[in-house]
Image 1 (cartoon, rainbow, N blue to C red):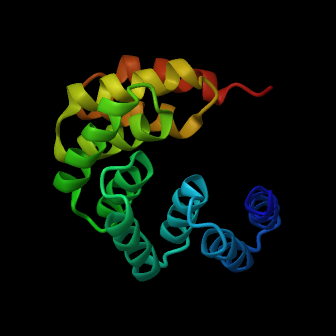
Image 2 (image 1 turned 90 degrees about the vertical axis):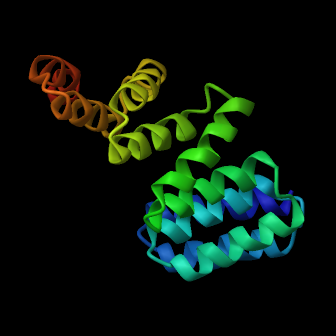
Length: 169
């Protein structure tokens, strides 16, 4: 499948530090296959992390017109909303996503970040604990969980959460 081949090429370009080239590759994957939902979500995420918010917003708006309640559309909307500073809308959308797939790690992680920002520390902690349980090697999730512990005055659990990440292999 051409879409999968282009997605693999984009992954390699990102690993090689060629983010702009990866954006172009993912755009060609999406533009060549209207049903490439995963490729669309990956493109939106890459655009957000590359600081190309206008393009990310445009892609999400297109996704909303074509399939407003689709899992990938909702996740992408939540991601872009959070990146643009609209944590309340992002939280609402990601709650819908987690209603569809409660163990979706990227959505759990995003929920943790969103809820930490909103001061909903218990909800953030629950989501981030699930991420750490599913992906114990994820240092970013461990850091986010540690921040949640620190925000609630619990340095002991914060240190305990980070200790595995501090060990050298």
